[in-house]
Length: 218
Ligand SMILES: N[C@@H](CCC(=O)N[C@@H](CS)C(=O)NCC(=O)O)C(=O)O
Image 1 (cartoon, protein in one colour):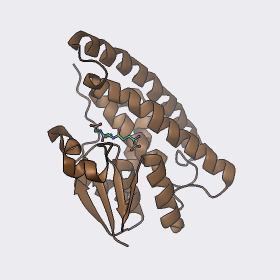
Image 2 (cartoon, helix red, strand yellow):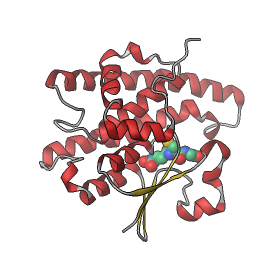
Image 3 (tube, protein in one colour):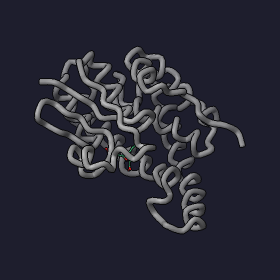
Image 4 (cartoon, helix red, strand yellow):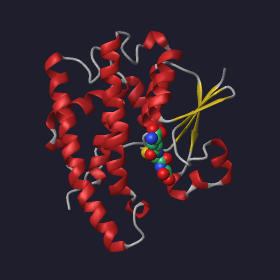
């Protein structure tokens, strides 16, 4: 069946984008310009009524939510071993993936899109500053995970590269927009640089025209 991915450059859709590349899948990349509000158009809402990327289309099936898409791609491309087979190892990867998606990611949304949470400019500024500090703390947890992976000589999810590594790259990259210098998280920064050199990741970054370090000192 034909695969397509609705994605936005630099957004969380980078995670399934990388997995599709890693699987060597033939898929149609369908960019959505979030900054132009394309996610709010009736045409896009007909695809995803929640108005977000990513959306994976497989034939007639439409799948949203990174956690679900990752699980689906793991089942559809089992040879890749995106998720461990052993139940406990798999649960631990899903635990971290869910935390990235339901905690770290929404904290950044408060930095990047504070207007979603208040109409008041003053309150937005407060939300942004508070969330940026929280975000730095959450990246600190990722730094500890990268240190542990470095000691094992492996990847965040174990012996194989997978969704956690692609998500970590995205989250650290976003940190630059929150005023966080990635080099201040040395193990995570080293890990993400290693991830960026993998051919499927480099391919997805090239398609999305991504610069890895977007931090600019004030
Ligand atoms: N929990 C959702 C989060 C998706 C999400 O936050 N997508 C962002 C981009 S990173 C988006 O489409 N934002 C556009 C908007 O909310 O208007 C998932 O896993 O897919």
